[in-house]
Image 1 (cartoon, rainbow, N blue to C red):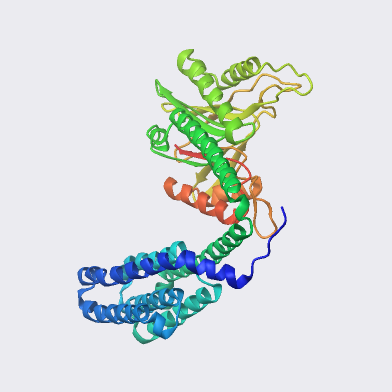
Image 2 (cartoon, rainbow, N blue to C red):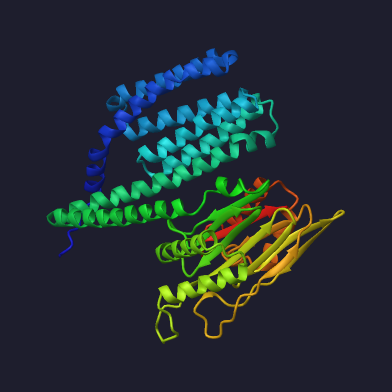
Length: 463
């Protein structure tokens, strides 16, 4: 189709025409809400509510005047909205400067709501966003110096830094939405004759994507119903945690637990692939464990893995032919004798760690796995069952390879097993919920803005 050039002035005119009414409504609603919110000031900080109300009345009054006189003043609706948002931001900066830490933390939510709402509702040119951000920072600094009893650290860590982050996010969100809206209007004007076809195709893509997403979400609900919740898992131990962070909606990692006659069986599995293919494999693995351990009452971990491998090969019809599926799983099966404090385990590919504390010294013990998957392998052998005498306070860690294989850091390299071992050892003295949080924070900080490469599963159990 021949491209039609539309003058930029006409595109802007159409842009303003399309969005002016919405912004006017949003501005009036914002003014009303700003006045209504003084009730919260009265209830939460009654010692300042009068000065807060005066500030709110001034901001709302100036905003109302700009709206009513915008034709006389020859300003756009976007300038009126900007005046309101800037006024509320300055108002919030003033309020913050008078608050103690508890009230500062509570009011931080209101401050963030302002920027989130602006980011979601407002469409203006980028320069207004940067002016708003700069004015917000300057006003917070000025009011802080004039009024705040808090230290800089207290001010920053109890809402300042988070609100600044949301404000910066708001700038880029408005910029992105403005550009997208502007381009959409320009494209609509240039491609008016093909609009219906474009919309039809767009709706079809959205519908198909939604159908696919709905199907995957339903598959996730089925998978999650088979994988025990962390609460159920933790009921079997005095101290334990499950750090489970799938890459996609459906996970290729799984865990499983069963207890009978003072024997606790649990498994940590990492299936071939992730997402939907991995999800199918996890359901096979869980059903095999149910059958082998719960139904057939097999207690030897090595024999359990041998039987699982036989079932996988049989089910997937694997015989080593070129091009056939090589699906399988790396899985660790543990059995803890609660009475005798003995751990027996068998593992396909993934090692098992135990952090043992002797006096003030912590030692990480690495127990190797059989270097073969639980699935078809060109030279597979029977899985070995290993026995470990446990001591009071031993911390047992089983995991998939998602954590050490995650790319990130300054140079975009893998986290690696060495660093993973150090992380486990250094945090083993913490309560297990704190260990889980530490593992989560460390790997997500390492990952940064990079894509998660695989499902992540780490299980910790303390004797």
